[in-house]
View 1 (spheres, rainbow over the protein chains, first blue to last red):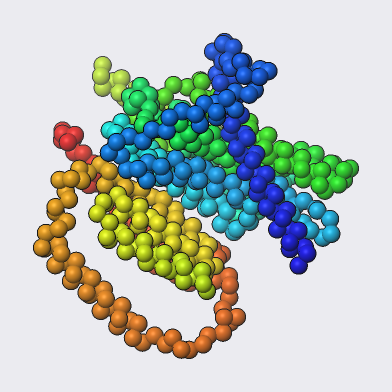
View 2 (view 1 turned 60 degrees about the horizontal axis):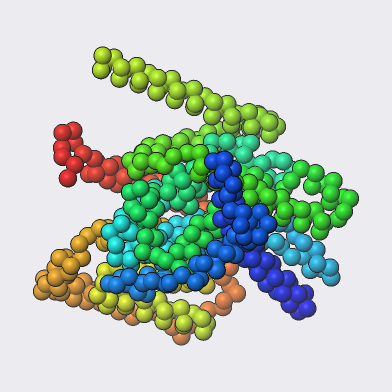
Length: 386
Length: 169
């Protein structure tokens, strides 16, 4: 009984900590986004609030709360309020199944699993919550009673549905490798440097592109495309409701970074784990692992920002073309390639490096073939026009 | 057990609201909520895989498309259509038939029989068990269904495709 209650308290503290970390990272992402933007555009960036402007998120929050909370006339009041709440809720729910670390020894036989819940459908949970995330945008956009908001909402819906398919297919290849849907066992199969990125280079590229689309980040931020739709789905929003929409985007970035680290970059695995385990004991090694996972997630947040200030926005037909005719066939090819590489290893009894080599060779062959094909198409077109 | 009653009441209430609410958008949102409640029932049965697939497929994809289509339609002009005598009659006939079927099916139920809960395997609803059944005992029907889906997909693409020279709309 005592062990159960200690475990319960420890789990509650853990969940609270993850919540605080997620919100903190999201708040400071808004600051770092501006700092990185300033750096890339050779500006100074925010430097007024506190030293180096590190109090900027606080100032922004105060500003957001102080602004007038405006609800437009003829809008659906309850749905208008529900929209940002659903966005925030779905953004925060995904982190439940992300394993932030291995088992922590609390003494007295209490082993705390640093993961919200270890369900045996972990990755499908992530997928399900991601597919629900669009409701916040859709409901908010519709309830605003504004044509531009509605257009933004409809764009968000069709974009999310299109990119979910490719995302799901790229996850299937991971499931084939690990043989389990549980995020914990996906991480455990990658321990000791057998990171999935080595076996799944193509799958990772597909997944990260889909993650950009699902988070509505540039170059896929068509739902809030200000040159065409004023502000998109949050045109009518003000005050902290707008803040919730923007905040949920940053939370989504951090969590999708954590999911990518879990699926492709070994989760809480890091080089030298065994050395630290022997030298300093279990707890230090596990806590360093938590740090490693958060570090990897933060790196992906940086990649999101990097891409935002590097690539221009897609046109809408380009977005749909990339999703349906580019990524979905590619991810199907990836599933077949993964199956082939697995067959190769089992039959030859070869080491893992054969599988790695086969995966990369498959990708190289695909790139060469598609390059040759597009060149041939180009020549054909040239002949036809000439 | 108490939670089961609560969840069932919630499910029935939201399912009723799907039919009773005037605004189609509200209907769809109540339907999404009904799917969540049904997923809750799956969780109580320890069928996690069915729960999450129900959310991904119905709440996450099909209902988003429903919402999408209803938002695109002009609701005010379409409103009176749903209240003609013909639709009312059709609804009554369909509902009556469903009621007859439910009554006929539940007539043979034996509610007094006590079943030992421990004789059931708690792992029945897990993804491993489901996979084993689908790919071992029912391989042929499963694969035939996938062919059916493929045919439906090709059909949808054929219907949605524009012929050369046809106008956009």
